[in-house]
Length: 314
Image 1 (cartoon, rainbow, N blue to C red):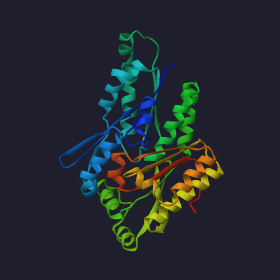
Image 2: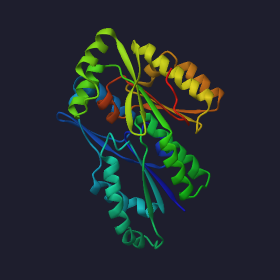
Image 3: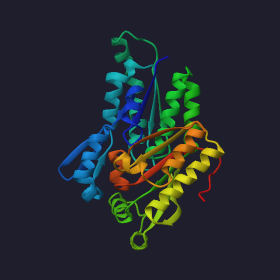
């Protein structure tokens, strides 16, 4: 059985990894004023757009995920021909309509695929499963990497489906933003009141940075720490502790809203990488998606992993 994998462009994994493993991307288009870029996970294009537009006007950005029709067309033109079963893994539905768009498109795809496959000389059934990763950015990468591993191991679609859906329940994403004013402005643009003006003002005045946690589609602060670098160091140290305690997959994902050299210079980074190496945990690090940066701001740091239980941030 030929198994295909699809992610949206908010999934923070290196472009080379996505290409090598033939993972299809559902791009999200970002518009800031007259400037428009379809996010295809190209780090050079993302950084160029960041420096030109996001830093000053990113809070005003409009993001447009693939529509139901665009997803349908992509599948019927290519994916239903190239594969027998496709897993489409999306950003949490609580933060983006792309999951709902993919779900709606799946009904049309499953109704209409037979003609396209027959024209390609294939009359066997086609199957599609849309998986809500229930997480964001780097943490989305955990399910995608596991899907690649299971496919390479020759596992069948039912086992992959069960594993991915269970893994989504245990995936944790942690984020430290640099600019609370930006985060609040962006939240207001999207109608999200989770970052109040008073909190943003106090946080910026006192240089207090929140550590935000996303799990099962819910996002909220788990700590408030004075200073951006101390907050990131604390987050990295916590991730290292979770690695030592044991993860559900041998994978940890990192993403950064800027040049990766800046990420690698942050305190706690070297210790986290050393801990992952000691425990045979593969680290994937990437420039944050353009979608991620316009939503959480330049310079934000995200770490994602899967762990059982309810890790307490200390």
